[in-house]
Image 1 (cartoon, helix red, strand yellow):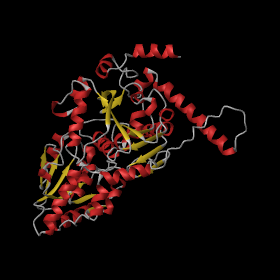
Image 2 (image 1 turned 180 degrees about the vertical axis):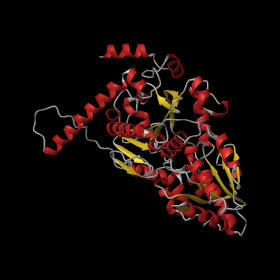
Image 3 (image 1 turned 90 degrees about the vertical axis):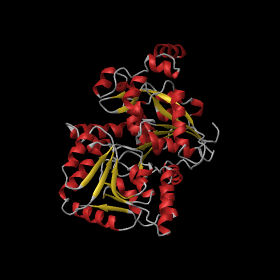
Length: 476
């Protein structure tokens, strides 16, 4: 293998689904490849036409992976100032209506040829590996880095029998990340603690938001009115995304917030209920359909209110700060990174929320410095990622240790060999369980997803599962 690193970034979603696990890995791939020192491949899910219709908004569908790739490239090229040089590959996937998630089908490690398998970046490693049945990631790749995006424990606790499900999920997440990853990066302390993990926000913001921030700073310095609107919130319109907390605060303290106007933007399963709850308030709370946060409509708002505590690191909070706005958010581990910015105001109680909101509406935001803008950028996020993942170190030329002789080993090496044997046994158990259809179904997998079906094989140009198994049998 050459000394030039190859990074394969695997993720659990893709545009046009406007979710964090589709957008952030795309930016990560673009910026990792920016300086030309690394070869980068973004590996994203391919869905059948039927699943695309369930997942993608505005009736957007793709007839082929080439069409889908063109859409993804066009989207990212419109938002960055350089031409991205990464490649894109697709793995077969299915959409689970029950989990509201895209799940891999078959062994997705096969997307990367063995001769270039160097570093695998698993965006949502627990999600990618719950039902993984295939090659062990650590055996194929020199280094496997997991980036934890989602606070799954917080979400499942809100469901029926949530405590029991959360307990099982916590164990499962620990198990699969331990056996399949060398290092885990948790975006904030809001996620569960995992083996060999560090806490570091390795996400940045779309450069377009920083451009808005520079424009607002210029207006403020020229004595112009930079912000003509009051407060707003934007996010997927489901109760778990902070809408419950926000409307409860506004309801409880509406007598102290007389005259407050708040605009809510979002689309989701709970849109109708959110709208009805907002109409019961005496305050002017208007509910609007979801829009892209980069829309000029949002440029003139001064205060962004985000009471959500289910996010790991809220992208819209970072975007609001980048645009020079004041942010009102809960004092919660998910907001720890944002506390370094003067325009981030955190509250511990409803009374504090009221006072901070009134003060923010009466004040002007603090100017965003060049260093603060850089800290929010994807350039800085990429630097943090390389350091947290320990990828700035030179590639070791030493082969992996495989003890085959009876020569006596030092104590520390015997301990390491024992740990490796235990891990191998744990992998074997996981592979055995994930290889049984009945077990997979019992734990929520989409039926018949051990191997891609005929439609997915045709779409991606893969050998049918039966031929693949015959080929492996002949090789062995």
